[in-house]
Image: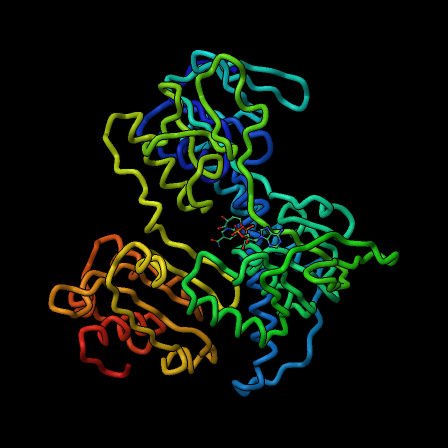
Length: 467
Ligand code: NAI
C-alpha cells in the first residue's frame, strides 16, 4: 500500500462506517476503511438483512397457507430449509457485492484487519495473516458497532443461539424459546411461528416491545397469540438443562419450565470497544461501555468522531447512516444538525409490522403535553381487506392547541401490513412539526394502505370520511 495518510480513516465497515466512507468519498475526500470481517457489518451479514429475508420466507408460507381464500388451489408444500438458507445467503452476497463495488468505485481504500487508534490520529491495522500497517488520518471515525448481550448460563452453543448464530440454524425447531421481547425477539418469534415452530417468548418487563405505544404492543400481542406464540411477560429466566437429545429445558418464573430444541437470546446488544483504543488517545468510554461523544459525535479527542452502535444512540442502521453523514459534514465544517434521536423512524418487521416516529401517547403525557389521539383500524381499510391482512391500526398523537383542537403532530404509530413502508408520511409530519390541519390536506391514493394514515389525521380535524 503506497498511501498511508488519508483525509478520513474509518475503523469499522458496518452501516455507520461505510456510510461515512461513501459519503466522504462522494465529497471528494481521500478515505481508508478498515474492516476485520466483511463490509456491511452486522446489519448486512448477521442482522437486519437476513432477518428480513427470513421474514419474507415466513410471509410466503403465510401466503401459500391462505391461497385457498383467494381461490388459488395449491398443493401443500414442504419447507426446503437448505434452499431457504441458500436464498438468504444469495441476498447477502448480492448486497455485499454492491457495497464493495460502491467503495471500490469511489476509490475508498479498504483494508482487511483489526484497526486500533493510537496517539495523534495513528491507526494500526493487523490482519489475520500477521501483516500490519499504520495509517494516519486528518480525521478518524470509530464505527466498531456492537455484539449481542448474553445472559450468564445462556452462552451460545448447542441449542442456544444469539442473532449471530440464528441465521445458520440447520432446521426449523419443533419448539423454540425466545428470551427477550424486543425488536429482535419479536422478529425471530414471528418468523419461527410462521415457519411452524411452537414458540414461547419470555420477557422480563411487563410488556413486549417496551419502547412502543401500548396500543401497538396490544395488537402485536393479539396477533402473536393467533400464531400460537405463548408470550410470558414479567418473568426471569434462571437457567437451562440439556434434555440429552439435543434440546434443553429452560426454567423461568416461579418454577416454570419450557422444553425446546432452540433457545434464542435476544436481550439487547452491547457496544464493541475491546482493543479499539490504544494508550495515547484521549477518546473516553462511558460507564456503560459506549464511546463518549458530544451532540456532533465528537469524542474527547479533537479530530476523532464515533458513530453507530458503539455510541449511545438508537441502534438502527439508518441512524448510523445519518450519523456518518453528519460527521463528514462536521469534518468539512458545514455545521450539520445532529440526528434528533427522539423522532427517528423505527421499523420492526415482525408480522404484523410495527413502525413509528415521535412520542407515544404515554411519553407525550410524561413530557407534559396535553394530547389528542386518534386510532383507526386496518379492518375498515379497503386495501387491507383486499390483501386479507386486517390486523392493525394507525394511531396519531397530537398536541392540543389553544382552541382545544388537535394541533401539532407529536407521534405517528402504525401496526399492520407493510407499515414499515408507510411510515415516511408520518415521519415527515412529526419532523416537520406539521399540524393535523396541514397533513389533513394531503391526498392519499385510493385504495391504499396509506389511506389509513390520511383518514386518521382527517378525523382529528373534527370531520371525516370513512373513519
Ligand atoms: P431490545 O433492547 O430491543 O430488547 C431486549 C428485550 O429483552 C427487552 O424487552 C428487555 O426487557 C428484554 N430482556 C432483557 N434481559 C432479559 C432477560 N434476562 N430475560 C428476559 N427478557 C430480558 O434488544 P434486541 O431486541 O436484542 O435488539 C437489539 C437492538 O437492535 C435494539 O436496539 C433494537 O432496536 C435493534 N434492532 C432493531 C430492529 C429494527 O428496527 N427492525 C431489528 C432488530 C434489532
